Amino acid sequence: MTEHVDGFFVSDKAAAEVFGAILGRGPISRSEVARLTGLSQSTITKAVKPMLAAGYLVEEREEAQGRGRPASPLRVSTDRHYAIGVKLSPHEIVAVVANPRAEVLASTRRGLPGRTVDDVTAEVASVVDELLGKQPEFSARVEGLGLALGGLVDARGTLCYSPLLGWRDVPLASMLEAATGLYTVVENDVNALAVEEQLFGAGRGVPTFAVVTVGAGVGCGLVVHGELVHGSAGMAGEIGHIALDPKGELCACGNRGCLETIASDRAILAAIARDGGPFLTSIAEAALLAREGNAEARAAFARAGEALGRALAILANLVNPSRVVLSGEGVIASDLLMDHLAEALDRHTFANVAGIPEIVTRPLSDETWAKGAAANVLRHLIARPLTNRPRARRAAAGT
Ligand SMILES: [Zn+2]
Image 1 (tube, rainbow, N blue to C red):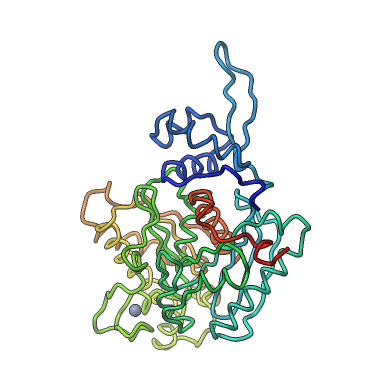
Image 2 (cartoon, rainbow, N blue to C red; image 1 turned 90 degrees about the vertical axis):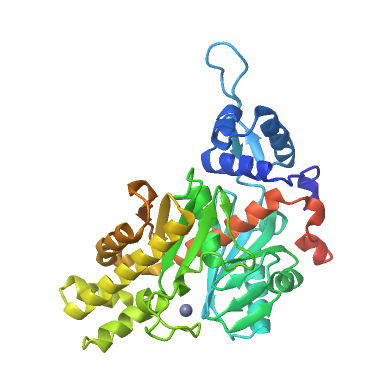
């Protein structure tokens, strides 16, 4: 790996911002990068130079308009540095090889053979081997492994707590580095999705926004002034466990009346059955029934939408995002949620109209989670000095 990254040294936030701007908007001129980031031309020149030398960026020649030097717009190279992104859910691994534009070059998915940490680590390593074998150039070009999963993850890649997997205090990043030989970044899945949205999606050019996912749970990734927010122990943005009804249903976390006990898929299905409606097994069935006019189903979605709106108002009052990207498997029912959500958000947000975030819905596939994990490790790779990275896979494998 070192042969094509010698001399690459980007350690400060400014350089990462420059790379992010070029990644999101390239081909782009240096002066446009300056305008987007608010950084000086000299800072940008300094940041760009080693990225060009390492091959992360390429320069395109363009004829100058009128007098002056050619503009030489910059873009991110898409064929030299790849990453593997893995989305780990309680039953399945979905994994992709992606380039820095988050374009998927290869993918795979497998059921999990077991739920112990060792089972899962071995299976992820096996998935990495499978993907690296899909193209001859992957072994040399894949530089990192990003893993995204539900739960609290600290800045060192330790999984502090995952209720869905039942794991606590697992040093997952270092275990996966040992098992795969790849530089590894472990991140909360919704945070990884927020990185994906920031670089390629509805978060582009939006300094302060939130990604809120609805589905098996309710998750939230926060980007404030361009930075992903983790909080002191990875818990920032856990809106799924805001207690909306102290006398409400028991939550998986042990408390009562959390947002998830009203707005998760399981909560909506349970509410329909509890109110005398049919027992259903999927949110798609429930949405269909509600659209056909079933009263219990419509009421369950209305309550979920209202609860989401109240939770988003709390988020708006605390963080004041200008946009909320609503995503996750549950957005297939957004038509049934949105009016109730918007009304509650409007009613409970403190300030005037300017304080109410714009809501954007984004459908989500399993691969998007994995792409987010890949985008997240690439973001770390470009912002992190080479000397601090573990040895590359081929070195670890002794070849
Ligand atoms: Zn809870």
